[in-house]
Amino acid sequence: MKTSERPKHSKILILDFGSQYTQVIARRIRECQVYSEIIRFDTPAAEIVAMQPKGLILSGGPASVYDKGAPQVNPGIFSLGIPILGICYGLMLMAHQLDGRVVFTGRREYGAGVLHMAERSELFDGLGNQLDVWNSHGDEVTALPKGFRVVGTTEGCDFAAVEDPQRKLYGLQFHPEVAHTPRGKEILQNFVYRICHCAMNWTMGSFIEEACARVRNQVGDDKVVLGLSGGVDSSVTAALLHKAIGDQLTCIFVNNGLLRAREEEIVQRVFGENFHIKLKYVDASERFMSRLRGVADPEEKRKIIGNEFIRVFEDAVVDLAKTDDGSLVSVHKFRFLAQGTLYPDVIESVSIEGNPAQVIKTHHNVGGLPEKMHFELVEPVRQLFKDEVRQAGVQLGFPKEIVYRQPFPGPGLAVRILGEVTPERLAILREADTIVQSEMEAADWYYKVWQSFAVLLPVQSVGVMGDQRTYENTIALRIVESQDGMTADWVRIPYELLARISNRICNEVKGVNRVVFDISSKPPSTIEWE
Image (cartoon, rainbow, N blue to C red; front, side):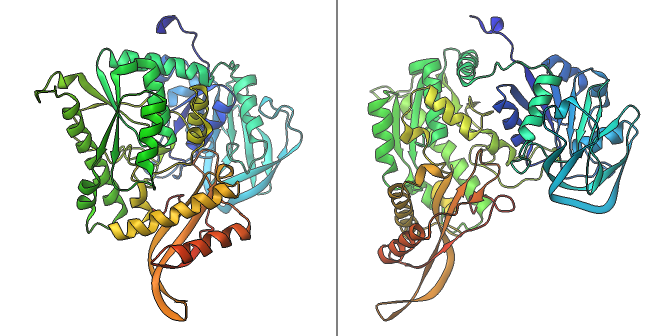
C-alpha cells in the first residue's frame, strides 16, 4: 500500500502553552489508541484545518492570561466547529478571548480537591456526581462567555468545569491528565470518543509501518549512521531503521569513557553477533575526557559531550567511506545521522523563541548539537514516550533484557558526577553503580522501577573504618518509579535492600564512606541530578 493510500488516523492536536504536563496529555490520548500531536500555541487556524484533527486540547501553562505578552491562541480556532477542551490555562484563555472574565482571586487552589457535578455533561458521562481531582491554579474564571454553563464546581472554584455544547467548547480548571485525578483518563476518553468521535486506530504496529515508510521517503538511497549506546532508545531506533532500509544503516558505537561497566562488550556482542546490523566501534574515551577536564557546570558538560559526539561521528564516517587503499569514495552518501530522540527529551529542551515553556535542562539528543552539522537528522521515534518505545521494541522482537533496560542519559556518567569528571571519580561511580544494579537485580527489583542508579556528590565527610579516621566521598542513591519520565516518585524499597547496597558500597568501593538516599519526587526535582 502506498503512503498516500494509508487510512488516516483520528487525530487530536494539543496546543502547547508551556505546561510541563503537555506531554502527559498527549500520552493519555494515545492510551486511548488515538493519535495525538503537540503543536505550537500560536499555530494559525488554517494550518490546524489542514491537519484535519478531530479535536483540539488547549494545555495548561505558567502564564496569566491577562499579563502583557501572555501566549494567546489564534481566535479563529473557536469558529472552526472542531471540539475544543481547555485545561487550566486553556480554560482561562478560552474564557478570556471569548469575552468572559479571568482574575487573580487570591484563593490559590493547589492539590487534591473534589468536583461536584452541577449539570449533566457528555464530558462526564458515566462518572457519577462527585470526582476526586487535582488542582494547580491561582487565577480563576469569574464570569463565563455567552453560551457557556457551569457543569462542575469545587470548594475553591465555582467554574471548575464549564461547557458550551452548541459550539463544542469545554473547559476544566483541574488537570485530568495527571494520576492524581483518578478518573481523569475517563474524562479524556469521553472527550475523544463521545464528543470528537475518534476511532481507536493508532497502534504500535501501525506506527512502525508508517515510521518505516517515512524513513524510506526521507532517506531514499542514501546511507544513515546511528549512534548506538545500547540503551532502549537507540536500540529500538536501530531495529526500526534496519527494518526500513536494511544495510543502508551503519551503527557507530562510541565509547566516550562515560559508559557503565562492560557496556562496550555487551553492545558489540548483542548487535554485532545477534542482530547482524553493521556496527563500527570507536574508542574515543581520551578525546572526551580531555575536553571535559576542568569542567564542572552541568550544561557545559552536556554541550561539550554533544559537540564531541558529532565530531567523532564525522571522523568515523570518513573512515567508513575509505577504500582498502585509503582513498575516499562516496563520502557524501552518508548524509543522515539517526538519533533516538524522544518526546520527553524535546519538552525539557524547549528553547525556541516565543515558546512559553520554561527550559529545565538541555538533552544530549537535542540541545547539545552543534549549529553546523555535516548530517541531516533522522529521528523516527521523536514523538514516542519511553513506554511506547518499549512497546515498539517488543513488536520488533527485542528480548526483555534490552527492551526493559532502565534509561541511561546520553551524556552517560558525566551527569551523575556532580562537578568535574575525572578518571578517578569515574572509577568510583562506576563501581558503586555496578553494585546498585546487581543488588536490584538479585532482589527482583530492577524491572519494577523506572531507574535505579548511583550519583557521586562533591561532598566529603568524616567516617571511621577499622578504628581509622576517614575523610571520603558520598554516594547518593536515586531509585524512582514513573510511567513516561515526565513525573516520578521515589521508590519505597525495603530497608534490607537499602542496607545491603549501602554496606557493599562502603565496604567495596575505595574512596566512599557514606551513602545517602534521595527521597525527592519529580517535580520539583528532576530524575537525574544534572
